[in-house]
Length: 356
Image 1 (cartoon, one colour):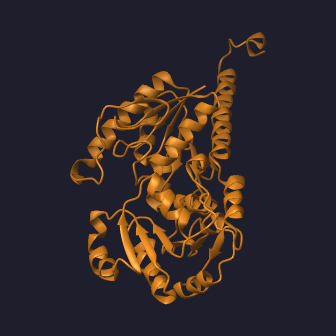
Image 2 (cartoon, rainbow, N blue to C red):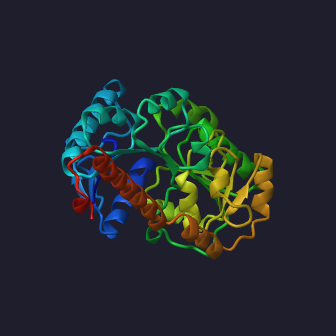
């Protein structure tokens, strides 16, 4: 079995810092390789994922500088990748909605993992391709989708990349896009209410520059509230591992929220607002707490008593990359069995001896 994993062309696989989809692709590709499954990753030339890599664009381009040409670049990359994978792979696994339209032109089964929030227009578009297989990354995400061939597979992470830290320091952490829906301003509110320092890491995208300048930057004093910029894997380990808790005060329906699992892998509990997948990832009293407001989050901060080792164990049991890989491998095998059964059904020359 050989799988073609098609990632967007803009960010390396794995990413240097920002890039949840690219991190997922890296974890899945390397996990499949360890299981003895051949993988080709379609990405850009800066990628370092430990699998066969193919690309037509040498360099990453993030943040996007020429937004009017984004569509053309992604379409060109995706069309080339799907065509190439259809010649060489048994299953083509894509990560973007535009890619499924190309299924009309290739004779290979296709899987799409839904990485973004629910969108009625996208759901309508997906239903135009009922023979494709769709993967939702949370139960919450799946509740608003209705494609006939759909299953839920939670993301998993490579736990060997995250260090358990049992002796925490007295500060809170926030990692994510600096954006209103991510609730960065609410994390600052918690720091103000508790007097516990907050360290913020994340990308400031152009669309959220005004939010940062007006709501976040004036609060930065380098003591109670500190912004440290984007965080690569090493910085994540240090920031999350030493933190007494990670704040996840989202104001939208998060499709998954991989950073919550990353924090827990470091033994750091997560204090999150409800929304989307949060209730599937945060287990009250075990891996953190779900809070209804910044006020409640502040109260929980003062009364945290969850051992780091038990938080880490929770991730090992529920969100390991091995568990995710087994689920995807099972899906690929099912798809290929279905294809073989369909060939038998339509081929009058297929003999019983051939099927044995």
